Length: 319
Ligand SMILES: Cc1cc2nc3c(=O)[nH]c(=O)nc-3n(C[C@H](O)[C@H](O)[C@H](O)COP(=O)(O)OP(=O)(O)OC[C@H]3O[C@@H](n4cnc5c(N)ncnc54)[C@H](O)[C@@H]3O)c2cc1C
Image 1 (cartoon, rainbow, N blue to C red):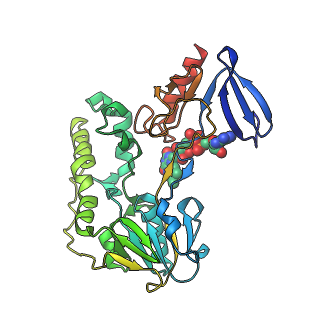
Image 2: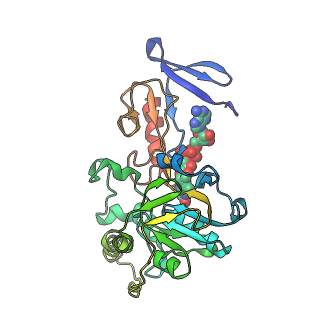
Image 3: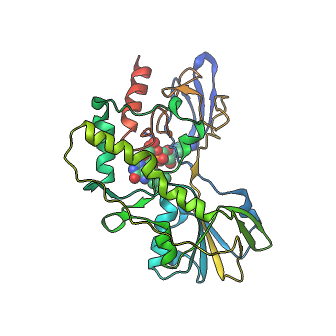
């Protein structure tokens, strides 16, 4: 175990081994397992370079608490779990918040009498007994869905739902997808009603029916789902936002993460910057990967799911 050691380059060496350069000198390795995480690098859109220099920009990766931000209004870009949860925290702190809405689906924190993660864990662990086999990456309609966002909800204060229309009613200024920035003026897509409808319908289209089917198949006694009251609140923000006129002093990029294998000097990455592999065994002999989104399934980059993949890789190496 070498602590405090950065690997800076991995390349093929003679005899099928690897030359590994590190901050503590050079090594030779017979096998390499890429376990560097599926959330390696903060993803910030290129248009961030068009924002005026006096605006503080930071990614959720660097956000800790509202006190970190300068006085004034702020814009959060993205409504995945991080964006939604931080927007709620800033609203509670009395901050004026603008929020660029993405398409991550809202999900109820509690469903049919239990915490939603209780159901998801049960489905993941026992679902196969009732014919609910977790989808493989190959079964996804598009490889892009390996990087799709997680359901929008929160664990704060014991856990509760997040509803974007409710945010709007409580004073958060909702906008569409951020499209352009020019001379201190931001342009958003002008589709917020459709966007909110999509965010709200996602759970009822996929996850809800799947959980209902599992509960029925497993014969679990659970109360019926409580339908959410229809909410017709609509935002009225224009598609353009002048940062100075709105008093915005900071922008928080809640735009997720990306893979980064720039240390790898071996041509094994696909167009998604993802190692070409089968169950974590890459095309290059002796090179393996674990902990990546959808390596073998939805849980591959989660604490609860990595064990199965890691066990397989350990077996491959030992074999
Ligand atoms: C905002 C957020 C929320 C999350 N919430 C959950 C959750 O609720 N539940 C859940 O199960 N999972 C959650 N995850 C996923 C969770 O981060 C992963 O499941 C877990 O961290 C994966 O562990 P890992 O060891 O594969 O990768 P990591 O924990 O990312 O560890 C990778 C390690 O590799 C090191 N490393 C990287 N490059 C190099 C290099 N060149 N040289 C040396 N060392 C290097 C890094 O320093 C790091 O220590 C969340 C992730 C994010 C980003």
